[in-house]
Image (cartoon, rainbow, N blue to C red; front, side, top):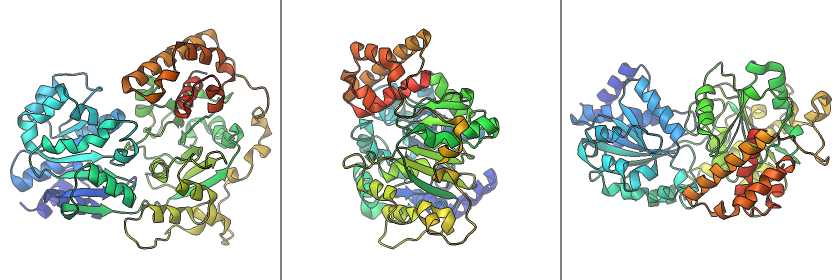
Length: 507
C-alpha cells in the first residue's frame, strides 16, 4: 500500500485531517529520511509521530514501533494518555515508570510507541536493555527527538544526555530515520542539532514554518519590578474568580501578594512537590479549572495542550528569543485572541544578562513579530507580520492610526487607578509573616532541593549547605529578590531564583 492510501486510512480511522506540513513530514519519514521539523506551537506536531507505527505497518507489512525521546515526565505522561485514549499502545520508561514489568513487555513488542527520557535510553540499566533487545528493537522504524531545541539549550549544562543522543544510532537498525521536532530553531541551532544527531545534509529533509501566531499580541513594558505591575492579573482573580482569564506567569522573583485567592493560584517548578505538579497538570487543562494562574519555571507547559490559556506573562526579560517564543506559544492554542506580555528592567537587558537579540526585542526597535520572523527564518527572505497592525504588538499599536484599537490598560500605570488594591511600596520595610510550621516546611523543602542538586551534580550544590539553609530559613521573612539571597552567601544567581520560588511557595 502506498503512502497516500495509508494516510487516507488513518484520517478516516481517527476522524481528522493532516495539515500540509504533517503530510510533508510523514512522507519523508516513511521514505526513511532524517527530518528536521520546525512548526509553530499549536500546530499539532505530535500528529506527525502518533500514527507512524500504523503507517509503517501498512506500507511495509511489518510490525512497527517508534521511540520518542522527550525532556519532561509531565509531557511524556500527557502524550501517553492521549495515545491510550485513541486506542494506540504506548508506555513511558524512566523514573516516572514504577511498573518494572513494563520492560519485559517492551522487549516483547507489546507497545507501538515508547516514550523515554534521554537518561533512561542512554545510561546502562533496565530501561536501556528493554529498548536495545527483543522485538521492540528490531521493529523500531523511527526515533523522534521531541522538543529538539533542548539539545542546544540544555545539552551542555542541564541534562548532559541530550548532547549524547547520537549514540542511539548504534543501537537501532541501520538507516533508522531520526526526526528532530521543535517549535523554534535558528539557522545556528539547526546546524548544531543536526551535528549532534549525526544528520547528514543530503539525506535530511527540512520542513519548517515561521512561529507567526496571528491571534497572539506581544506587549513589551519596562518596569521597576514592583508587584503593582501584576495587579491587573490579581484583580481579575479577585473579581472573576473561576471565570478569570487563564494565565501562566513565568517568573524570576515574584513577591508574595496578600489577599489573593490562593486556591486559584499554583506554583510549578522542578522543586515543587510531585503531588502538586500532578494536581496542576491535571487541573489546568480543564475548561472549568479552578486554577486560573500558575507561577512557573520555563519547563511548565512544554508540549502539553492547555487550549484556553489567554495570557502569558514573562516576569523579567527572557534569556533568549527561543525560550520566549516557546513560552508565548502556550497561549491562544484554541484560536482565541491571546497576550504575551514581557516586563523587563534595565538590569535584565544589561550586558551579559541576556542575548543581544533579546535586548533589541525589549527596546522595540521595530515590530516584535518581524524581529521574531527575521530571527527564526531558515532562509534569507524578508518576512513581514500578517497580523492586523493594532493586534500585532506594542510597537505596532503605538504607531497604529485606525482609531478603534482595543485599550490595554496594563500598558499604562494601572496601579494608579486601583488604590483599593495597592501593595506596599518597594522601598518600605517589607516583611512577610512566616509561622513555625511554615519555617519547618521551608527547611524540609530546602533539604529536598539540596538532594536534587546533589543527584544532578549541579554546580550550585556547594552553596546550599546546612549553614546556608538555616540562614535562609531564619531570614525568610525579609527575602524578596535574588540579591537578598545572594547576600547570605549563596553565590549563584540561578540557585537564588530557585530558593526564592521555594520561599514564595510556602507563604
